[in-house]
Length: 221
Image (tube, rainbow, N blue to C red; front, side):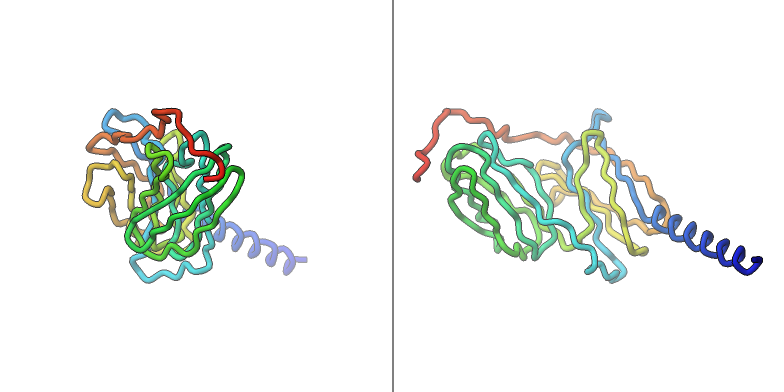
């Protein structure tokens, strides 16, 4: 009976240590703008600095919709080598393209159709447009890590980091007026778990993706 009690206590202790370690590697990043308001839709990612192996982390492929003649979401994040899925939710044809370095593509997509662009292999910013509706624009950020997300409506982002060690915490937005459109700092895990960053410059939304001419090509384009 005593041996069974001791075994149970050890199991409980191991379970508590496991939970504590998992919680220790969950970080929250809060980003506010120059007016202390939540900065929404910024990419947040962690680059391992100690050669941590993260191959077992498998994020889902991003989905970019064409809805009401706009790219939704306006900004997506993905790990290099993954595919990105496009879904046309409009009742018209779009001609999606990118001329960004090695991640270039061009295709037509009719109403209700989907298209997968395979293995974007070059890290960095991918600017997308539509040859038919020239006001449409969107971005895909390709990163060399599976640890990424975006800030929510509260300006917060939560990332569960499965391997301890040193990481580069990077904050990115295409209109962030910083070098390479990003801010970064080195962090060590386990350690501090909550980070707050205030932007030094405003983020200007340069494109509302609004139909200015109310003009569409025929569906059989």
